[in-house]
Image (cartoon, rainbow, N blue to C red):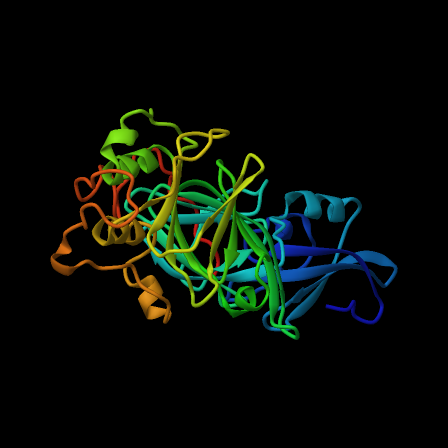
Length: 350
């Protein structure tokens, strides 16, 4: 957004509306809006006095606020400074929070804004589904945490670039059309390595629950490992058409996954993966459902979690390294997972 006439842009500060305590230190009104988003801030002079000009990027509402002394510096320190708008929360089940560090986490609501550099977290029995500006969908299940490390969308070229960092929990990522046209521009970072997206749907779990699911798919090899917070399970849920798939890079080695249901498991950070294996439909569907709010992907016109005939897991699916196993794992599915989720916070603006 260009600076208005008479204003000198100091920096593209993107201040989260109604989360700032700026009005406490300013002699003037606060930028108001009933929707979540951001406001750009410029430094200008009003009648010889330094002032801040807030322009709401959603509504165009503007207000110039005179500053006294070092109030502007106090504003920038005390404000909740968010990155550029990346997307919105489409579905929120129970408790989810978001914040741009170092700001405190606030409650994320339906239609609430999600910004680049935001950290999004869920509590127990909770989940959130996000739609990014390029049409990409991603979701997380209970007791999960992700950060949007990077997101850039060029609507003129219909191209996007993004990096999503999965810190813990179950997640599902459905790439939008721009990432189909420009493969390699979307990446998911996990403790075990980086997933390069090629127009696909990928599901994963980070943390001790990843081992529980791996033991369900391969009880023999799974018994050799111990639970670890950095354990990572990655499943290719949908290829997105011919040539689709994912490339997992870890420790300098690239492992491609090109078949639906194909999976990788890393026991811990820095360890080599177990050989690629197949996850049967029932177990895969259970993991996928636990990684998103109910009907999130289906309602967005994306491939939904898989269902198996009769609800039974396929035993010995082609390419599986183990003999199959029980259908399910402790703490899985919506509302599953261990305790220790973030407490409810103040409402995030809408």
